[in-house]
Length: 473
Ligand SMILES: Cc1cc2nc3c(=O)[nH]c(=O)nc-3n(C[C@H](O)[C@H](O)[C@H](O)COP(=O)(O)OP(=O)(O)OC[C@H]3O[C@@H](n4cnc5c(N)ncnc54)[C@H](O)[C@@H]3O)c2cc1C
Image (cartoon, rainbow, N blue to C red):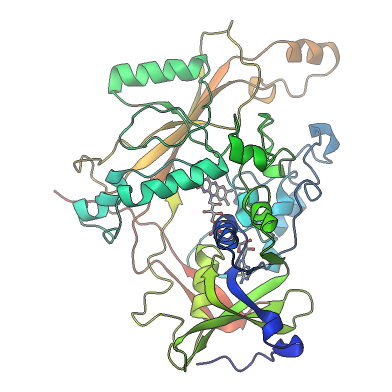
């Protein structure tokens, strides 16, 4: 039913003052893009972001710090890990990046089954902390559910989306090497990263023995900026400190790329500390007309209006907002006539990995680290069901010269330490898998009936788990 509990002081300034051509909820990867496209089309666009503002460079407090300038050498203390048992599991969460992740106690949710919901609430959202892997889907990914009868057939195919991949790649900057691989199509690449000698060795051996590709990965790093990326003032110095926020805009984030571009048009308003409670549905007009917002600090409620509303609050928060958008017409959430809102949650699993050392190539070096990895594109179940599971996986991989800690030398001091750091370690290599999970109706999120957050919004209940689906022959 409509939520009457909100006391809305909305129109202190009048409805017109709170009206825009378009409203975008969330300023992360997708919200930044929506804002850029809308502003470029001449629409006055309001971006509502629940977190604080992040200004490029100014709000990257750790961007230039050396390891010894961190109190705990980038490690997390036992206290912080105890206070943040969930978010501290996120890839890349450390002393130098923690400021771009939420704190567990501030943003609770109910785990009906164990589920790690990783969030970054700030202008830029998770675009500040993402891993930047940016490979295209292939035709075989779009056709797999129909081919093997799992999930739901995609209503589009690769050719429908390929021009949009190009549109995005040309703007954000994606590096890669064109290799003509069926399961990882080529794109509009900037210069790709070279493989080091052990990676090249892996490439050669994997092809020779298994006919599998080992390719330079596709990453949203501006290795040799085109004119559009130069206009954005971006270039990558291979510092490999991306998740701290990059003063050079070396990787794509909304804060370095789409939002400043949108701002240049004069059509953009970004409003931080604005927690969207729900979308307003007008029964008479039979359409969504605005959003209800709660000020994150004062808890005051305000309404904003627009003809176009984009919900870009990330997958689970977008579901939360829509489920919370109840009206006489949609008592179970906006557009939720079929009851599927919040269902079929699926994501990647990273359950397999391995590492090892490599004898040889002791006389070969590399000069700079690269903020990128190699990739073994999916080779499973591509045209035929060749395993006892459905879906596929890719493997990320890389090779490196071992650090002191990996050589058991971290506690050396004095002359021994100087000697140890002056000699490169042996070669190490790793692989980890990113697996597809299959959409299932029972994997769902829903709203709590009796628990709310500090803004009076129902807590999200996550009921998501993995069950390996096998096909019996
Ligand atoms: C550690 C890590 C590494 C990753 N690596 C990769 C990778 O290598 N490649 C890849 O493709 N993907 C990667 N991802 C996933 C990727 O970051 C997300 O898919 C992407 O950010 C989703 O974009 P989005 O705009 O939907 O959400 P987000 O980027 O999360 O942005 C959502 C925004 O909405 C705001 N918001 C939420 N609720 C509300 C509300 N009620 N009102 C107002 N604002 C709200 C949030 O604060 C946030 O700013 C990674 C994610 C993590 C956590």
